[in-house]
Amino acid sequence: MGAPPGQRLSAAAARRIALAAQGFADPRPTGRIDARHIRRVIDRVGLLQLDSVNVFCRSHYMPVFSRLGPYPREVLDKLTAHTAGPVRREMFEYWGHEASLIPVELQPNLRWRMERADEDAWGRMVRTARDFPELIEDTFELVTRQGPIRAGETGIPRPEPRPGHMWNWHDGKVALEYLFWSGRITAARRVNFERYYDRPERVLPAEVVGRPTPSVDEAQRELVRVAARAYGVATEPDLGDYFRLPRAESKLRVAELVAAGELVPVSVDGWKAPAYLWPHARRPRRIDARALLTPFDSLVWFRERAERLFGFRYRIEIYTPAPKRIYGYYVLPFLLGDALVARVDLKSDRQAGVLRVQGAFAEPDVDVMHVADELAAELAITAKWLDLDGVVVGERGDLAAPLSHAVGG
Image 1 (cartoon, rainbow, N blue to C red):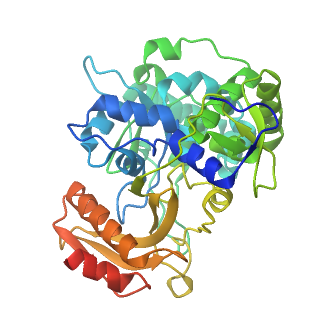
Image 2 (cartoon, rainbow, N blue to C red):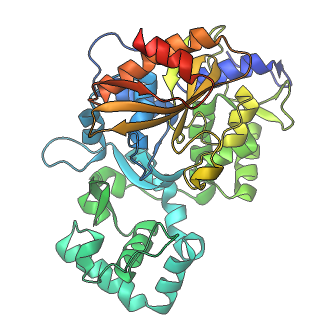
């Protein structure tokens, strides 16, 4: 049921609404998990963010696991990769919330971003397209003739790595990325996380490619709708951030949906900004979730929202020099019930065949022993899903000793 305009929500009610919208109000399946379960997760969260870091697990696999438990990753791969034969691609790769896997039905609603490549793409891409248009066209013709191709197949060598630079792109890669941003090419698949580029009409379903392009305001309203369904209750910056809309346009689209009755203004105790409720959002009285969350999970990827919902201040420390890290390199929040109760720095040690807990930290005022027991159980399930033989807990953090005991027990 929706709330009448002007209704006030408690912070706890808003938190439960948000968790239900993200799929954490439902128990995990007890039987075989198939594509139908995965589609339901994707329908709820709207997109899966990609990230290159693989110290624990590729980030796009984790949100599905967090909500469903152990599932066959190859099923998600089939939904996201171009496959010959009768299998229909259901997701494509583009800039949604950063690089993301997005349902193909939303592709027309992102064409406005493609059309703005000359203004919105990263600086080197824009400069290359402006100053060397012949390189862009030659690269496009190469993809047309030979696609799908990797960046290394453009004939332009990769530069030597430079200290402090994660991406040392050569000109061919820059041209490919500009064409990718502009929508003239897309990702056919990834192998070892490397993109293979091809023409959209050879990758995406024909009915999607042939669909008319909506107006900018219509397309952006649909993206805000997706965000509103996925969040349940949210501020305007929350909603705009989901697909990284320009702030001025986000404000306009939210106002238009409010005027149309598709978003309900509410106030939430403790929230400084106005909030908006998706009228069909579930409002459970209790949440009994248990999940490890990747740093790029849509429940926590907007750090201001995570702090507002859970009182959980979260900053990713991958790019922080090791001596200055507080919690660790790849830290996952641990959701228990309707609260974020701990954080763990995880590493999949594939050579040793174990999941290493390099640091474990409890949030204030939690039952440490209960959290340790529940976290140990979740880590055991996670390790098995990742084809690892067990869990090894290090010594860092106030939760490390009780967690080690719980794992050993």
